[in-house]
Image (tube, rainbow, N blue to C red; front, top):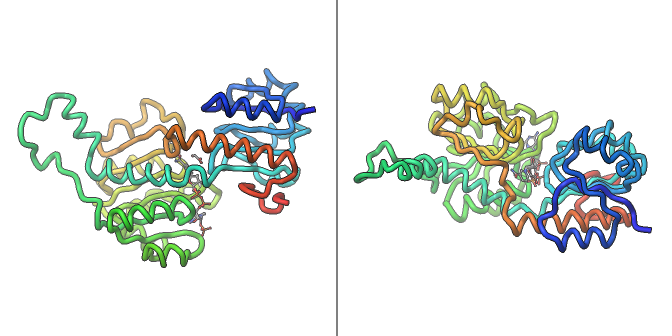
Length: 325
Ligand SMILES: NC(=O)C1=CN([C@@H]2O[C@H](COP(=O)(O)OP(=O)(O)OC[C@H]3O[C@@H](n4cnc5c(N)ncnc54)[C@H](OP(=O)(O)O)[C@@H]3O)[C@@H](O)[C@H]2O)C=CC1
Ligand SMILES: O=CC(=O)O
């Protein structure tokens, strides 16, 4: 008999669903919420696998899933999972980091370019018919090339960003992480910095690290005050890594030049967020990995991950090392 699983996110192609259904008896639910868990309570009680993204998997949910043997998230980040509770139950949690690294690094460069060159702002002026002659200096942006890129989180995506910034834009690279990364230093001439030093020196401060107890609000009023008034902040990590209220105040007071944001403390970003009325903010709807090819690859990887994990082989892409047997 095929194992029962819950799929809580629509897959981007029919062949992916067909593959999942070849291996498992699939119950599709529209997201993980108290309502869907109640509505499909029997399916949750019977499920041995859970696959999807953007839902909270905590001990409350795990208690309702006594047969659960593996979780597969269609994402690199896994901050919505209670990893300790999964570890206690010996349930492997699988993720899809390698499928999206390059695409997310592209998105970070996109945010750097769009904010620096004020691309959205001036394109809006063109649409409004304001381009009636030679543009004045009030339409000018700043250069990206040869400016200093500060990367907070020199993991897979941080490295891919450093590659773009170093080779593509001749940018000196500063970085902060928990440990020095000799590979980044050798390949991209990156310099390891304490956070304070990076904030004070970088022209672009780019957040690309996980949301954890240690990183929640790691950038707040004191850190924003350390940045140059000409610097641009980019957040591609998770919204709560940045204190959004502090950012709004800093932008309003001209403490930093601009912000490029792909992630927010509350998603979707409420339409009345003050961020949306600031001309020097570029707000994207969490599209870091959102190309058709990458989303396909992520879903394909997530399916493989679940098949492997439920076959007792969570060798690759398991985020809980000692469950990775
Ligand atoms: N916007 C989007 O759509 C996407 C966002 N993301 C986010 O990006 C994050 C990073 O992804 P990825 O590069 O694959 O992850 P990795 O695990 O490869 O890298 C994470 C990096 O963050 C560093 N780090 C962790 N904790 C701290 C800390 N307290 N202080 C400083 N640095 C820290 C790590 O340091 P060290 O190397 O020293 O251990 C590592 O360099 C994900 O966790 C996710 O939240 C990911 C994909 C898409
Ligand atoms: O934010 C997206 C992810 O894959 O993590």
